[in-house]
Image (cartoon, rainbow, N blue to C red):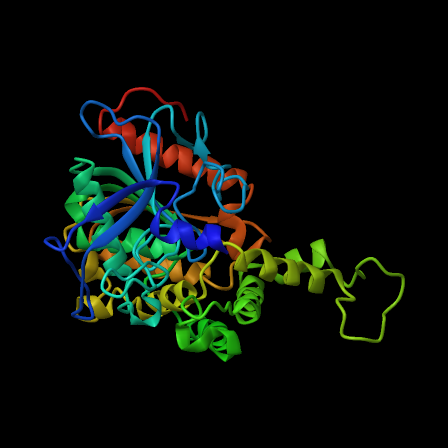
Length: 387
């Protein structure tokens, strides 16, 4: 717990600190200052500053894309995708990933210390949107001296950030790759998030969000939220293939409420491991930011208007078994981009791994990513690379 709380203020990452003289004005009308953004970089920025790729992480991800995580000791969450010779090739590209504001791994969020009180912000932190996260990332890109990103890439909540980047800063995004994402959060997904938030807030140890100040931890509520959410990241075929109705370390049912089935034990493990690295209030804030995301509503009710006259080239990816962000969501974006006259390609990948397929070994995703980024790099005159 102490290590996680330490990461909120003094992370094992590079850090950009913006002072009180450079407030971040949020969509809610609130101003956030000072602001801290924790980030990781991989590879080398070329002399022309044209080879930078920004990776946007998903709800429960962070900036530790391709390095050992300082809290868990595990490999980065996209180690299969990012690295030397990999689809996002750090021998060729300068890769950046920041912890979103509202997160808990070093960027300003509810777990951060409020300089005015000396205590964690908790639920006193302002409610955020995806666009707020992107505007904070733009400050980081400014700080790094990068005018135009070669590409912005991300899946799920990361894909929402990619779309917001392309809409808010079209001249700064040469190529955009939203994976397993949508232009708005569906009613069903908002409902799943509300179940998770209620699980957290119903835990007596949540203490109205002031658990840090009161030395408590709402681990049970957060674990249940993670368990419920994790089911939505999988597919029925994947669950059936991996677990079926197999029992966990026993020959027969115990006729109790112990974890008789392997799938029960798996979900409990997911919940327990999650609470060791994630802040409960951050979970509330980030799920709420996803709920508020509606790119068409932000552009007069027209999704096409969000990308009007864009010169960004797009590649959208969906997975056949993803019922959380189904292919229809990606097709809606493709239609809007076509209406806006954008350069867009679309790939639906056959997979039974559900929404989490973008994080797993998917050769077709690797090939699509490598091909799209190499084509973008060639169009921008960046040497090297092979399909």
